[in-house]
View 1 (tube, protein in one colour):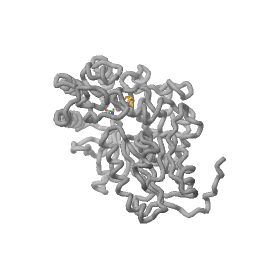
View 2 (cartoon, helix red, strand yellow):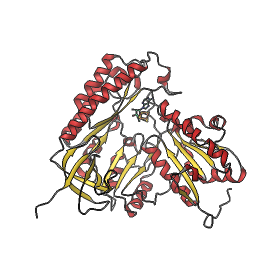
View 3 (cartoon, rainbow, N blue to C red):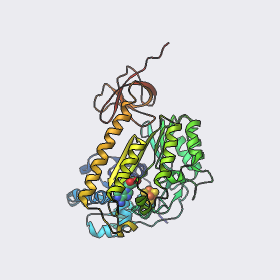
Length: 452
Ligand code: 5AD
Ligand code: SF4
C-alpha cells in the first residue's frame, strides 16, 4: 500500500509540459497538470526553471514521433546540469516503446502510457525518493471509477472533456488502437458531473472528445448512447455551446443528426474524416463505408442544415493509390465543399496492417498530391468563408485578440475565428457579429446594432 504524503506544507515545484498531437493529448496534459497541482506543482513556460519536464507525445505519423526525440535531446543538458530534474514522456510514443525508451534516452526518468496518467504522482514519488527509472504502460479494458478525476479548474471559457478512450476500428494505417488501446466509454454520470463542474468555474463551451465519439456507450458507459449523452450535456446549466470530435462516418445515427435541430447549444459543425474518395483505397484502409455512402450522408446533412460546417481528414499516397484514385478524392472534395480539411501524406506505422502493404507511392508523388489537394481546398475554404460576408453570426467571446489587444476575438458556432472591435463585451458572452471581411485564417466583423 502506498503511504499518502501530506503535500500541504511542501514548497511549490515547477512543471514544464510540452504537448504534441491531437486534442486528446491536450486534454491529457490538462489532466496531468490537475493531478500535479494536488502535489504542489505549478506550471512554468521555462524548462530551465522546471523541477519536472513532461513531454506528451504523438506517434500518428513518423514525423510526429521524430519530434519527440529531438525535443528530449534539447533537455539533456538541463538534466546534466541538475540531476534532480525529473524528465518524463507520456502519450502514444510512451505506450509504443515503453521501457525501451529508458534505454534509448539515458536522461529519461519516467515513461507513462495513456492508461496510466492517474499514477503520475506515485511514479514521481518513486523517481524522487528511490531514484528509480520507471515505465508504466499496462493497458486496461475498463476505466476505473474516478480514474479521470473531475476537472475542477477552468481553462477559460472553453474546455474539453474526454468521454471515452481507445478505438476498435483498426483502420489499416492507424496506430491509435495499439497506443490508446481498446475502446471504452466513461460513464455518463462522470461526464455530466465534469461538465457541471466546468460550468461552475465559468466554462461556456465544452468539446466532447474521443477517437470515435459516435460509438460512445457501445462498450462501457452506462446505457446512454452518444446522442443521448450529447443531449444531456447540452442541457447542463451554464453551458452555451457543445461540440464533439471525432465522429466516424459509419457510426453517424439519425438521432445525432436530429439533435442539431433540437438543441440550440449544439454547434453546427461536424468533423467527418473521409480519408479518401476512392472505393479501392477506402476498402484497403478498412474504413467501413463507400464513397457513395459517405457522399449521400454528408450531402443530406448539408441539405438539411445549410449553415453546417463540415470538415474532414484526408490521407494522400496510401499504398496502391493511383492517379485515378487521387482524382476521385479531388472530385469528392469538390463535390462536398468542405469548410476545411486536414490533409496528410500517408506514413507507414509499425505494427499496422498497411505497413506491410506493397505498392508504396513514391515520396515525391505523395507531396505533389498533398500540394494539389491543399491548394484546391484553400480556394474552396475561401469561397465558403466569403459567402459569410454580410451575415450575422453569434460569436462566443474568448478575450482580447492576439494581434490587436484593442479588439476582441471569438469563434462562431461553426468554429471560425472572428476578430471585431466592440466597446463592451466580456469573455464568455455570445455577441451577434456582422461579418465584414475575410482574412487568411479568420473573419472580421463588427457588433450588430439591433433595432431598438
Ligand atoms: N499516415 C498519415 N495520416 C494518418 N492519420 C492517421 N494515421 C495516419 C498515417 N499512418 C490521419 C488520419 C486521421 C488523422 C487524425 O490522422 O487522417 O483521421
Ligand atoms: Fe485510427 Fe480509424 Fe480509430 Fe480513427 S477510427 S483512431 S483512424 S483506427
